[in-house]
Structure formats: structure tokens, C-alpha cells
Amino acid sequence: MRLPLLLLPLALALPMGAQGFEGTMSMRVGAPDGTMMDVKYMIKGDKMGMTATAPASAGPLAGSEVRMIIDQSAKTMTMMMPLPAGMGNGMLPPDTKGLKMVNPIGSGTATEGSNTPVEYKKLGTSQTIAGLKCDDYEASADGQTTKICFAPNVGMFAYPNLGGGMNGRGRGAAAPGWAKGLSTAPGFPLKAWSADGKVSMEVTAIDRTAVPLSTFEVPAGYVDLSAMMGGRRP
Image (cartoon, rainbow, N blue to C red):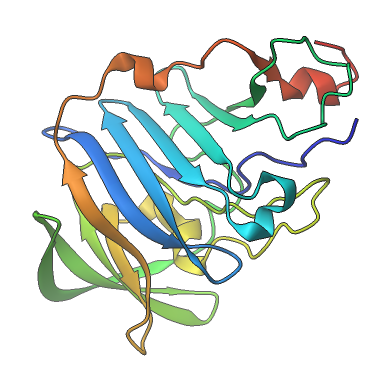
């Protein structure tokens, strides 16, 4: 059975003080294939959930909803995807709905890339995006500059770099340079745009309705991919 190299490659987390904010953020984010994809973030205290539709560059996962749950208190990142057609080949339980991978996270970072040096310079201007005020910054990383509007005291953020195809084929581009330094970023990014004005990420709506705890639970029927890759049958 051929397995995906990663479910959500290079997701980068930023723990922030989340006082005063609970809700769901909808945004549009640039995918590795150049298209924009719809992503939702659910934030509640020290927990964050994310759902996104995998782009065409994700190979057999294209069009599937992928999920991620970050639990800072448990120090875990759980990544989930539905089971692509024909993947099980009789090796998985008949009631298998999908695959999951649980990774430990440290205090302040989630995965590779979060220690990349990024300089954030406050520009002295601000915006209101989807009803939430944010401050404009210029981020310099990897020889490039990007303008980002950060909102403080919102919650943690993970960049949804959904590129991985089967066995790494079609993995797509890595997360942008500014996203690799999120552990030192001044807040939750509501918008990111290049010098020519092209927007690569923007929050489109904010729903402050309370997020149920069930949002951060893994549904039954998800097989642990970590065990399978270690040579153990589920």
C-alpha cells in the first residue's frame, strides 16, 4: 500500500495569548499550484482547528477536506485526511474513514522552519479586516519582503501548505518565508500581500460564535498513519 508522505506538510504554528477571542475565521490562502483555496480556523483557548480543501497539486487528495488540530496543553498536532479511493487494498479495517498522524510539538513551535530568521518591521499603519483591527508590518525573509497585517491577542496560527501528493510527488512549494518565523511574529496574520499589491492570504469573515469542544476531537474510524509507516498493521 502506498501512503502519503505527509498529510499537511510544513504546517507552522504560533501560540499567542488568546484572551478575548473565540470563534471561526474564514480566509483565502494561496495554494502551491497558484490558485486560492478556502481555509477555516476554529480557535478556542489553547486549541486550534483548521479545515481546508486540498488543491489540485495534492494529487489523489485533490478536492478532499483535510483537517488539523493543535492542542497546546497536550502539546500535540493531529493531522487528518479522508482515505483516498483504493488505498486500503484490504489492509485496513472495513470501517476506516481516513488516516491520521499525531506529532508532538514543543512550546512555541510546531514543525520545521519555525526558527528561520524573519524580521518584522512595524509600519505605523493599521487596517480593519472582517471587523478586526490589525497593524501593518513588513516581513523580510529569504531575501524577500512581504507586507502583513497582524492582529494581537487572537490565537495561534498554522500556515496551510497543502501540497503533498502520494509519496511526496506533487508536494508543491514550501511555506512562504514570512510564515517560517511565526514563533516571533507579532500576532495572527489577517492579510499578506506582496510589493506589487498581490494578496496571498486574507481573512474574509469572522464568526465569534462559541466553538464546541467536539471540533477538536478526532472522529472514530481514523487509522494511525504513524504506526502503519513504522511497519505495524492497524
